[in-house]
Image (cartoon, rainbow, N blue to C red; front, side):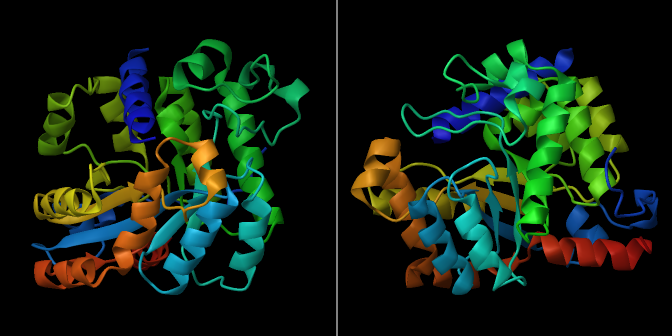
Length: 331
């Protein structure tokens, strides 16, 4: 799954060369002071501020079980739900009993697994470009870009947010499954526009020169168009974004994770992962099941918890980010 996520994101950024409820008043971010978004939001200047963020919630019962434990035990700070998936409703029922937890939308325009699949929330006849020959969403970002219009994409992400609201989930943030909403400039523009109209922050990165250079070095073509679009976006942004890497063993995975965190620069960082409990069913869904099982275990590990203390990590979530943002901007 990590490969698919990274491949989707790389392809997505490459493609950038080419009646909604308004629930927040957006103000100019020049009311915020600091070199990083962490500073702008009132966090200490020289500290790594981190969101541990679980993706793919609602995708299957195994993901729900893992994340409910992790959120309930405060092992992680945030998670995002896939509204089109079969187990989203079950997770929403849990959330309604725990509304203080930080839960957002993992906006979903692809259905990548071989046999475990889903279609859009919107009626299929209204978004034909999002539907593959099996009447499900396309398996990859490229196919969505080739077949779907920005209007169809916008209609579907609005429908997913509205479904969550109807289920009793007020999303704290939104991000993009497999990076699809960065598939074209128009997709990204729709994504950020919807975020601002609903007053729900999108996962977007503040492309300061050193951050942009990091992504360029990884093969991401950071275009002037992308930079301008992100600069105009008026809700909080991350200073950097990461995903938990794979490992040949659990110990190898932990060491790579520790090295990754040690290399984070001060600022507002998010690191994503895809936890699930181990079952026979999970093994039929994805060949990344072992990595997902380890990711459901690692943040309860006393070794990991001590590591965070030793590193002086400050944890936050999207609800706190927006509270700080509103306090500082009067929005």
